[in-house]
Image 1 (cartoon, rainbow, N blue to C red):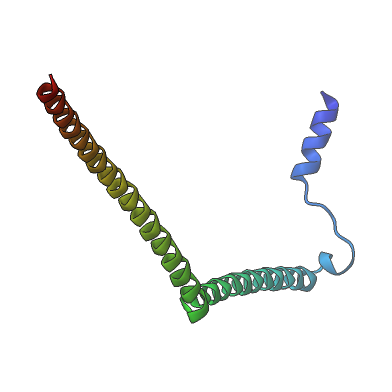
Image 2 (image 1 turned 180 degrees about the horizontal axis):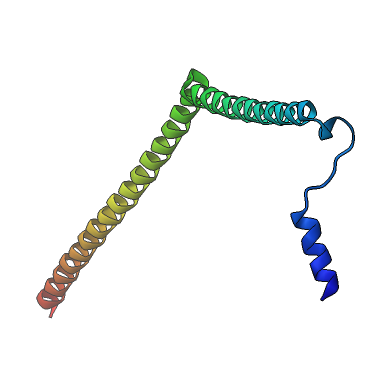
Length: 126
């Protein structure tokens, strides 16, 4: 219990400073130094944000520049070309399958007519 009172009294009592801080002029000088430190920190943070924004604008300008947009256009062209080739291939396959169906139907009809002709020949023979 006694120790806590001693600790509390240390917190509430003003500490005696030696050197330049003990005088009024020294205290004022210390506060001015503190102000300078804060001003420097603010200036540094402003510089950092300025650098970040300038980097961002530079990157955005690069994205707008010819090289990146032409690369993008080139990849878009490649994509559309690939898509058109794929659709062309699909159409070709579907048309081939349709042609195959028609060809099969023709052969079936031809086979039926051939069968009918042979049946007639057999009928005349008998």
